[in-house]
Amino acid sequence: MQVVTLGPAGTYSHRAARAVDDNVAFRESVSAIVAAVDRGEFDRGVVPIENSIEGSVTETLDAIADAEIAVVEELVTPIRHALIAQSPNFDTVASHSQALAQCRSYLEREYPDAELEAVASTAAGVEYAREDATVAGIGHPDNAGDDLTVVAEDIQDRSSNATRFFVVAPADERSVGGGKSTIVVYPNANYPGLLLELLEAFAERDINLSRIESRPSGNRLGDYLFHIDFDAGLYEERAQAALDDIEEIAEDGWVKRLGSYDRRHVLY
Image (cartoon, rainbow, N blue to C red; front, side):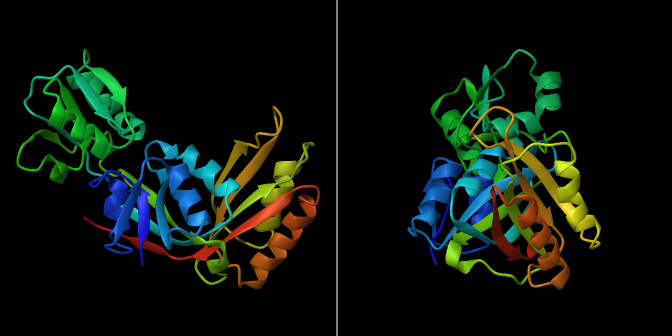
């Protein structure tokens, strides 16, 4: 099995992807990963969906809404950020925008004058530091290797920092079996009580929603679609009944059932 994820080697996505298979290829963006799986170029893709500090990864939400893919597993990994540089003397801190945000308090306290530069990934920030002595990267401490210094470890603002990843696959691998499910709903409507109707379809059947988020549809201003994760498998009668109601509410739009799956914790 070949897996594609966010590169270069050493990203947190790469570490999560190795729990799926050791044969890992890389792309430079989440949208490119999802598109490659959608085209059938890879068996699996691993993409970040949510961080416990910074919330949902909007690029992933938009990419999976636009593609015809399946969500077949959820991986949860702890995030350990380290400040990595050639020496303690640097002017710029470079990392993925999410990593910079997850370490905001530390950076403001310890390096208030440092310039913050967002790059494609945590691993790319570390490579930048490897090439430029005036730059420090933020990434997993193992990324320092033998030629860089770990200036500080565990610099994330909260020790509970963790990221959820979706393992995505071609659409024909969508499953109804699993403890959780993900759907995307585009009602193509806007009226008082619309969101309440969507929520009631699950609440009336005692189905817990673990996440609901709106994203612009891209069709017109003020028009939204909804990403919903819920704690039930699509095989369950209660889930089928809830989705029947959702289909009726969204009769002028669409409902995309990305599949049911289980959660796995990955430690490294």
